[in-house]
Length: 112
Image (spheres, rainbow, N blue to C red):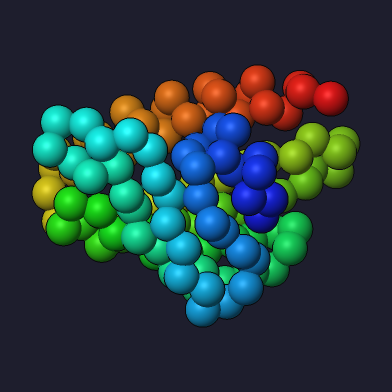
């Protein structure tokens, strides 16, 4: 979650650094009137348990929180929470996008 190169493989190109207050961008090719840029700022870094940052795109200013929790059997669960939506359409778009990005994460996790 905090490696910029790996984030680029499953989310988007970025200039992320795991430093509270660091402003960064996720970037992809522009599409349908969207410039392809998501403006972010790191809010919390508690490796390896929790990471939080803002997510500002198309007038929606939301907060992303990733948490990792390990069960007694060693299984690790990754949880994503994105809050602060003002429009249902934006929520639906985020749900679609994260579903696809999480499928890509599965592929990245099995890479050597």
